[in-house]
Image (cartoon, rainbow, N blue to C red):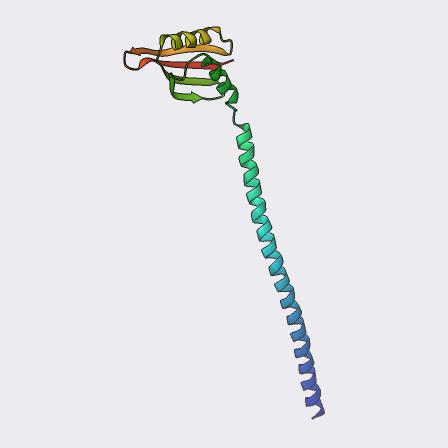
Length: 145
């Protein structure tokens, strides 16, 4: 009978020790789960940040066309607002412009501005037409220095 009681107490002690160990292990697992969730969030933020930085670097490496726009703007210095630009394709090195000039004075000013400018390597005039209703239709291709 004493052996049976000792055996039962041993089993009970083993059960209590295992229960305590299981509780501690479960608490450790729960703590690790919260840490993993926190790291997932910060890892997602890190990936988004890296993606944004890559996009910013990509945009910064793209050639800037602001100098080209300023150069083209100088060609229209003495041209009236009656003349209109139909189309403009402006990059950092080349500009293709299509415009309608309504009067002879505006055409003279535009041509003189092109003639006197030193901002462009090449100036091509691929199209030059006249219509009594619309005026002069001009296409100009310019290459920056």
